[in-house]
View 1 (cartoon, helix red, strand yellow):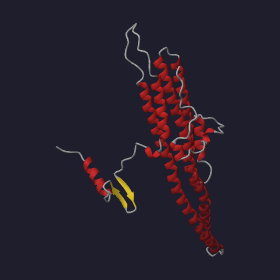
View 2 (cartoon, one colour):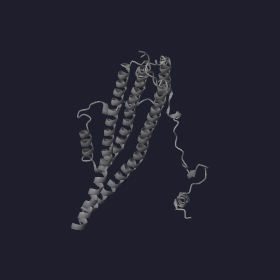
View 3 (tube, helix red, strand yellow):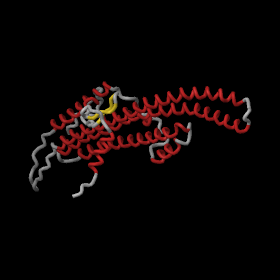
View 4 (tube, helix red, strand yellow):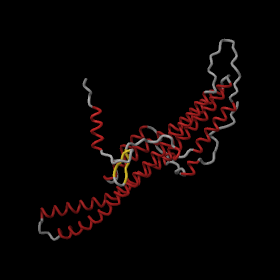
Length: 309
């Protein structure tokens, strides 16, 4: 058996790792107490919005739901690696050298797909943790909102019950201070929300692009391995030509490893084609001319009108 090369061995950091160091290990991979079942997912999702400041509850639910997604991703990663090993074990028992070698090498590549799934969990957690920072700032703003609302309600109550009460003046002064504090807190919330939201989803989409492009690379090299398998039908008693693809299969694995190691986000081949882009002066089309959304809508509306003979 020619099991002389494997992507599972420890490797030097890839070009992408050097350009953007990988994030810490995901928090879902350690400290698991309740397990990974669907019941646990439901409990986390249903209880997340039941506690804490009201302002932060919806985002708290989103953060918990994303944790459920990560648990599922971890399960997929582990199952993918187990499937890869099982394919290799099955091929090892084959009497055909080509089937044995190709299944072993395919197992290596499929195992690497599982490793990529595992790595993407850590990067996904970076996105989720950044969302949590928005949740935390929302939670910190809630008390200032509550205080301002409480003072406003007290003033309204006194004006209705005791219009001449001296407490009204004191409360109005407190309301002015509370509104000033609230303005600062609301400005921080607005600024941090935009900053962290963009950062979080940039982490997410960069991770998705890297994961998908690397998976596509592995799929391409896997299909190259399949080409080494001779599927020409033979008649009973006919001897199939001896398999001579051991060196070729090893080279395919090495080429795949090299491609994965050298890949960076700047080399992503799938890029969006936008008909508009935003500038400081507004939106422009692909020709650099001012983009008129109304005109564009009217054009599409005319195209969608039924044509009468």
